Length: 415
Image: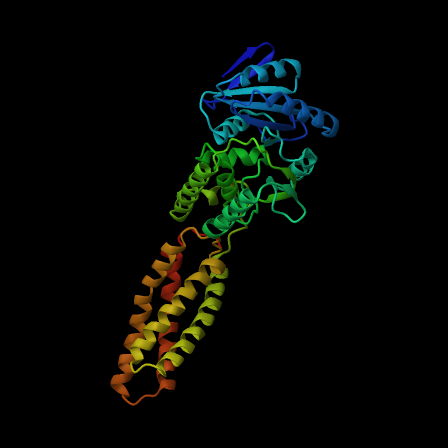
């Protein structure tokens, strides 16, 4: 949906009806870079921001560019200022949304753009603009899929209060622990993404506010995309109107939501990785059998060692057998998950470990029956003979265990 106003194209991005452009090539029509500035009631600061950014791009960026002001439901004269600037400068465009939310504004503006590389920065320009070219260059070259500025790199020069510094570092530690994130700065308002990557990821992003950045980056990592980090010079805006407490609460809620969705397999990250060409070729059954056998040998040795140690400390051989079997099974499921079936990340770990422990019943039936038989035939059998019998029974259960893991526990997984 589009309408012309004083020579500027103002797109109502609420509907998201704009067609998605093809991948960037030599014959790409439209700007190479589209820098989106999401704003809400920024009448006083918007003009200085746009003029400074426009001058910087005009002097340093050698390709066609666009600056898109994404006005999300401003209640002051922000939209009028944006339209006036767009009338004056052909490279400035305006997107107007009727609903608030930085994430919502970015998502709709990016989906409506015809540029090859999409970026955004905060209206206060806290990040030094000299980092813009290093931010987008890896995307243009094809080296990376997403690019982010980081304030937590040793090479970064950051001026901000200790409270915000602590909150930022604590939040990133939470992301590492809860979601296995490897990027260092989720909330720096200075990011870029290739258009084809945005097209694949944005339909999965649910948050329309401040957690948008984190959700996008976590999904990018789970889709095995490459995230490039750029150290930045950053100066805290003393007039920032962000409600830190409310934002922190919403972020933690978002972390829980994304973690639960990943654990339950609700997000098609493997499908996206496959479409983007980020999954290695599937290993055949033969390769999985060899890896499974190697894992099984190591875990069998571990189980036997645990049984021998525990048997010397407890009176019952059955108790020692069950304890050794449970511990070895946990290690076996983890190793097969990672090495035999090539699964990374915490998603589905609890379910798969539970299913792996369920297989203990089958293996235990083999080993328990062998011990009972040995006890009936040779009541005075020592630890060495008992250990050997347990080893033979475990080997007999291995073939059945592989079939169960391949067809049930890790069904559909790629090696």
